[in-house]
Image (tube, rainbow, N blue to C red; front, top):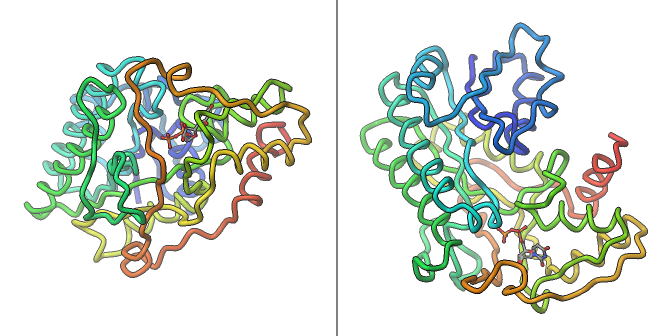
Length: 321
Ligand code: UDP
């Protein structure tokens, strides 16, 4: 197949590209390198099955030219990471809403099966754990910038479901805290990347608040397997799936695990949300997916245990893989 991966130079996108190339597909990556990096895909540049287009999903002309040629689209391009969204909400909203609208419009025009990457952030601060795909969303006020990301992704999902209603084979995958090789070491989008960087530099590991908030960290190979199943299982069309591990880890626990794995002498410090993100900030305390639908429809279950995934991630951070 000829497959378009938007955001294919990013963390999850480039890991997906590796698998698709390994399977022998022709792959086109559309990425404006805002957070993606050429180094994530440069090992494919010499292949005649691989094409890299350095442009934005906001460029409708480019999208049309690419989408009319492909058999499948993985739409992963987005502004992600709480810190990016809080710092520049306008860019995040425009990219995440208009960009996805553009992709879906062209997918519909040329009738191309599409997978839309969404986020567990959709659920906001809902306490209805484990979070079901059809559970109620609970968000704070519009003056708290963080929630704009949740709403932007929700609009993306509404678009996807609306096109599905018109017959387009489109699925939505909601990622739960993916981590692994090629995470941005600056750690804007991931506490794991941030803790590894801090631990390896001997700097304090900055746990926010009391550190008892939890996440279900999902190794990127699992994230990708779920994504590809959503593109290939027939019954997945028109549906939304939580893609993640359901093993819950507190941030305190994570900090200790990373300290131990790296053998770092860094201390673990607690800092307030206000210090970290500024005044208007709200947090999701527990974020655990209900994975029933992914298991039943896609046959998906996350497999890589956290300690193993962290070890592989550390190898990448230290240049050993
Ligand atoms: N976090 C932390 N210290 C940091 C960065 C994040 O304690 O330096 C916490 C954050 O408050 C959240 C969790 O780690 O509870 C996951 O944050 P991340 O930014 O990785 O993603 P989120 O799940 O919030 O989108």
